[in-house]
Image (cartoon, rainbow over all chains, first blue to last red):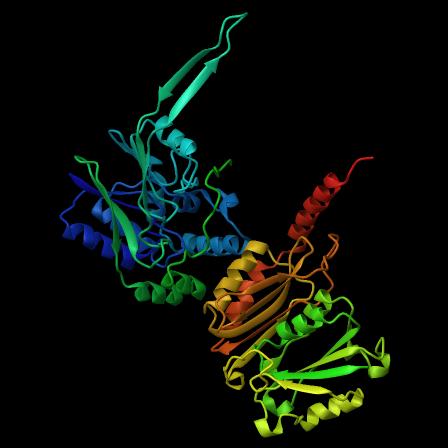
Length: 271
Length: 261
């Protein structure tokens, strides 16, 4: 059975509606969302309410957490002062616009969702704030999947969709013995694991402005990355209309993130 | 024997780069003077805020700034090579290549300078072909940034946004920007070029306070969003506390690298 995985909606209603339409057209009725429903974009309430209306199982993203727990739940992830200032501006705007009911909903979201050997998280099993970038050290990436007890890990947060198969790994352990006994060595082959990044519905950063999500086939294990056109100009107009910085609209219309990405793949929030 | 060359051309045609190359090839004493050019040609479009002069003085330390002199009597030697840069939007007719605008001539007379050679970008074959943008139809905006220090990653983002159209159609941008490690960068972009120049100045400021040298941004283009540019710049500049914290770390690193006796 095919199911869709979406992530990082970022209060972009036009993009979310276009992706839902694409999913519906393919007859898929099982959807999992990896969080970041809000942040930067102009329609936080509308997006949260559509998630609730469709009953889409959702885990909590870093922006969802920040809106509930307050700013600076992880201030160390901004790559520049400019990105931090813009992030804070977007945070304050979102926090002031989001209804209490929708905030309460965000507070109920779990950090992970699991379906057999499939694990769904926003950033990594360690934190909503950790970036699993496609070129992350293979051993570290495998560790994230293996210690979480998953065969396939679905994540978002980076806004770059990718499928990464981790295979051919092994661990060799040398144990020093007492006295003159020779060291004993053990080698174990590591199982094949996968990381699937769903990209971003509302704030793409993969080279163009199209919304991205993935479709996973439970039976065959096949994963396909979908790119969906949406009315970018409509969202850009909404950004300006609600009083968010006009540069957000410019960046979105050119396929850039509202602020900037963090480059440190091993970053883990230590608050 | 003293040689005086006058180089005239529109903004963005490559005068500064050509002058720097020429000065670096010259081994003796040299001097530089930048004249505003004819006032009727729209000085605002060519406003430079001393960026070119500061860049050239940094790259050629022996270069004398003639704008600070009352006459050539102050030149270090009789065989000094003098380069005079003039902002001029339109070259004269070919038949009149030695023509000098009366306002420019007046400025030269005051300094007792008589050009031995006059070169016009767009007319003289010895010079690279200049771009054909009509700068007089562009609006100009400039901002003094004296004492300002940029967060490096923020500067990178701002410049990217600026030259890619986030704040209007920018045709030309030039700046000297300070970084917290004491360096200053000459940032230069022209719409006809594929990428920006980011060239570090040789002189590095001490890590003890805010820098005290020329720092300025000039932008030429159409439908420029002045408020948007200013707002983003404000978000990029370091406050006193952050600057002191970063400089303290850098001072400590420098101290750690000192050889112990």
